[in-house]
Amino acid sequence: MTTLDMNRIPKHVAIIMDGNGRWAKAKGLPRTAGHAEGVETVKKITTEATRLGIKYLTLYTFSTENWNRPAPEIEALMGLILDHLEEEIFMKNDVRFRVIGGIDRLPASVQNRLHECMDRTAGNQKMTMVVALSYSSRWELTNMAREVAEKAKAGTLLPEEVTEDYVSQHLETNFMPDPDLMIRTGGELRISNYLLWQCAYSEFYFCDTYWPDFDEECLRQAIADFQNRQRRFGKTGDQVEEETENNK
Image 1: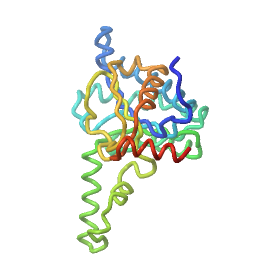
Image 2: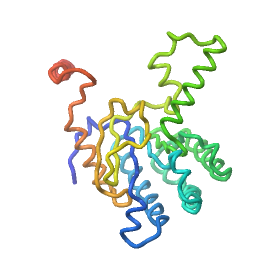
Image 3: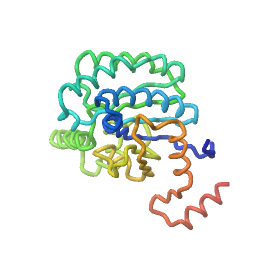
């Protein structure tokens, strides 16, 4: 088992859960079987993330572009959300459930189930598990820009009031810090319209493992890699080392 520095666990981990379809194809199974197995991985990783002390776990589940997939696959994905949104997992691990994205596009049955789960887990405090559903960064930023334009037109917002903090507070993710670590499984080396603003200074970790095979040890390896990096945020390495030494 990979050894971790428990004092340097990332506060917020975001994951692009890629490879469900390819995992299924490699095994001669329908794509829906890959998605079903991917849901089981979500349960394992949510439990492990909670155990490690991660405070926010954000999972890219369904993008705005995914609406272009075949209708039967979309229907199956919606069914999986309904069937596997098990509050027992959240209650057992003291996890709050949140959703970001344009969920008004989802079937009413799915919307209702999501709201029920958010309401019933609202008091949980150990970790917040965030599901990005019908989400994309361009959609999110466009909505924010439209809101700014409307307020400016109405005379209720001045140009100098549009700061970085203002933007951050008017995005879907305004209730949590930006990701420290962004993980993508499945071997692709892109972030696919995911948390573009929020990941400005995130550390990226890409692995070839398909999401259904991504287990607790894989998560620990990603965190260990994160812990071996020096996060400079525009400063020099010497500056960071000096600040670290002064803070001891």
